[in-house]
Length: 398
Image (cartoon, rainbow, N blue to C red):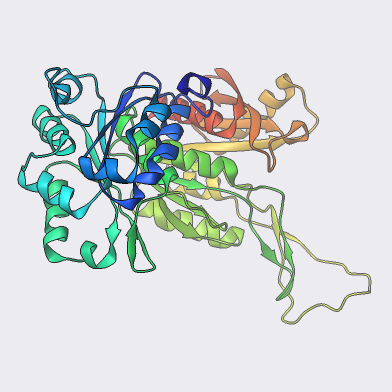
């Protein structure tokens, strides 16, 4: 039952009601897992199905997934108004999967299935609607289907684009769909803002094969990028690791490359820079050829340029969040080091942690968030939760 899993991943959808409208695509079989993922983030989910969908997936499967009766027809309860009318119970109508047929009907105001009736009502009452197309690629490429998708966008409908592969426009991954639902139902307190985030470690070349690096995984930076995007920001993530995060990403390997990328992105205009990367403190002039093994080796290191200081010198009014990693300190000592870093670099916020206690490469962490006034906030737990706390603090200073 949903109560067993409600909110077990996060509470980002707590208090929200999502109606999943299922149409007659074979991708309908994916909706059970999607519904459970929404519930794991706190959502209450109800389902409406077309007759074609019920031929592919039995309504009992969705009733089990949601613990609610599935709507397969409009009755005297006027279910479409109950959920999607003005003041209705639903916070979002998610049409998933959406066939070419249903997309065309919604775009043209044709109202002849329970799903299209819900869609007509939701659009008329101003409720958020998201559509997740799924069909063969040839159908997806049809000019009329593309026009219908554009028409829906013009009505304010969010289109969660499919993955086009193997001759099919496959339904978006559940993680992407859940993320878009979180964004649509999120606070929107960063809407219209542009945030640049650095993440992970650098790699300084020793020779054509070897590098100097550190243990930073980039998980915190990705969590920050996702949280900022969920809350409406236009996000650019600068790092050297591949990530499926649905944000703009810029590759930067060395500290110098990261500095250049940051300066270029900030130069395009942004509201805040979050320096979550564990930037290399030292670099070296790499050997042109592979260094022979089996012998003593001395490397001459030289300090890298400090990215946040360079940005602050160039952009004195930009909001900047820095990170301070230390080892072997108690909270008072850690806070003192962090506050010194905040003053030295003229930061707006600093996030400090003792990596000897964990956090480097792990899925959870404990940090202190300190602002210019010396106020401290402790955050501990999953990095997604810590990212939310950091973004909360950033919103306060923007």
